[in-house]
Length: 166
Image (cartoon, rainbow, N blue to C red; front, top):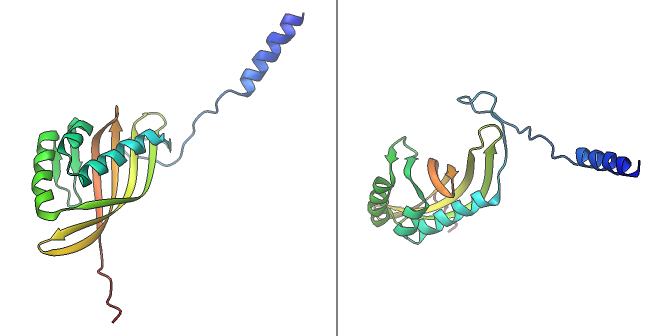
């Protein structure tokens, strides 16, 4: 009888402490019914390393963090397919524009049913357009698979120059 009581108590305790089903929030039209929850900071860590590699012009680190089949969609809709094309693009762009990113917010998220992990992050970017230094804000939505960047979309807006106070 005592063993039965302990068994019932153990089952009751376990059932009461079972993890709640992840309901999530939001929607994604191409995947009807998908909802999203917060993902782990490991997803953020990949993105921070990726941006640091860009700021350090470390092409080997960028290549190592890229999925072989990476897809980059720029703010104008232009697409870069594959690591080699991405590295070639960056090599030229870095020498012309000298961009530097500063991440000012980041949120990892994950699809409840699909399990895809993403990070959406805001960045302040300083770069050259010709001889003029400009600032832009970028929001980047990146899909992370197996610790690598598989896909990202760049959304960008110009930041007006600061007004002279003289």
